[in-house]
Amino acid sequence: MAIIPLFGLRALVQDLFMVLCLLVLALNWNMLAGFAGLVSVGQQLFVGVGAYSMFAAVILWGIDPLTGAVIGGVVAMALSVPVAFFTFRLNGAYFAIATWAVAEIGRLSIGQWRALGGGTGTALPRGAARDMPGVQLLRDVLDISGAAAVDVLTYWLALGLVVVMLVASWLFLRSRMGLGLQAMRDNPVAARSVGVDAVRLKALVFLLTAFGTGLCGALIFIQTGRIAPDAAFSVIDWTAFVIFIVVIGGIGTLPGPIVGVLVFYGLQRLLSDYGTVYLIVLGVIGIAIMLFEKRGLWGGLIQRTGFDLLPLEHIPPGPGPDKRTTT
Image: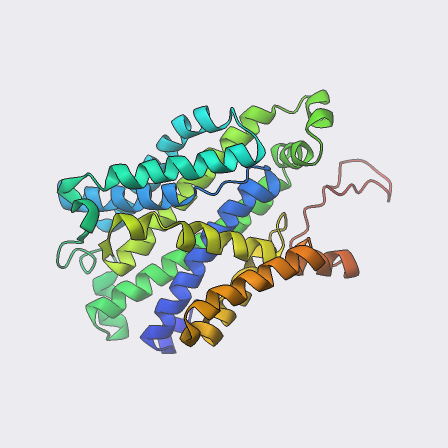
């Protein structure tokens, strides 16, 4: 995938960039819901806050967009602290509704920020994206336009973010804290009885996924170059589609979101000309999989074959062939 920008059409690079960004969002949501048991429907809050923080850094303070994207991730993580303080007092459906309500408050509040266009939004200053580090080098080496170089750079950054997310998630989930997180998800009472600090682990995951989601949100809107509250805080684009991807791929598995995003992209390309039929088909497929393959496509494959591309098994130290335990 790294070499696709060298020979692929610009439209393909843009499409795959969005697929990679959806995959990053799906990996973050899967970590929350699939491993920590925090079913949030308000992740668009961190997408929007990350993106708007990046725009504020560029427009108000003259910072380059890439540095602004990192700032966006940090601001999203900082915001997750008070959000967690209030929403962690709730469980199940109440937690999900609370996260959505907080996201709506964020959207309405950002709509009052006149310096960034208010409800109508704003655009990056002319040439801001093309002045990012690395863009001129890509123009010279690949002999492409400035806009195309921005697309290539953001594509490679999104691909790198996917790789980092996968590796970090795999290492974390196989660590002592990761095993505690999964134990807490499966049986909170038993996990607490062996010393697992549920609140601390959930808070850590919530903060880290907020950072990843905010960083990805900033990257998305660097590529688009324009932002508005309804687009940045879209519950359909940044939460509903992400939940669909994770559910059909396999919630609680690392390869699941990869499978889900491939299915989502295929359906999107196949049904994009049919308007609302596209959304209806997505809904029907999601319901069918939840009814007949509750663990998702990849989860069902693991159950039937025992094969897992990214296993989360933990082998404790010590002799003996029967020391393998599966979480």
